[in-house]
Image 1 (cartoon, rainbow, N blue to C red):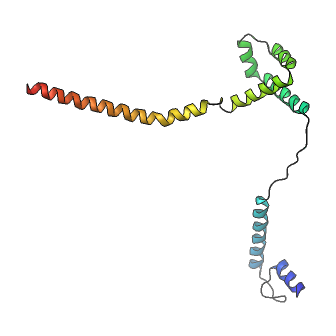
Image 2 (cartoon, helix red, strand yellow; image 1 turned 90 degrees about the vertical axis):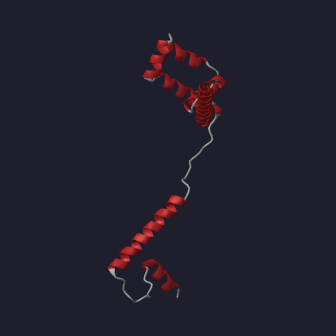
Length: 157
């Protein structure tokens, strides 16, 4: 009995052990199994290869990242426009302590992400701007209607 179950599972032959499958049924079975395999493999979490690194290695990575940024032509041009030679900036980065490097790296990451709370102020402005416009239009409309009433009253006298 176990052999028959394995045969049915392996071949997809639902009718029994001895009956043949046509080509169309075999193709459907193959496609169905391929889809099942791919969809279940997509749901599995990817393998992560993580290791413990020392603080020195993490800080040196930050230091190397900052030095790499200084090598970019646009940043070098900005430094020179402000009167700082890129070689002087690299020397200053090399003289910074590990804590200062970590703080500088965090500041660079924050500046890339939108500059901190600037995004919140922009969102608040976008939310309040329509209400301000509605209030302004309503105020102008009420002034116009008051002006018409006063003009009508002046014409009646």
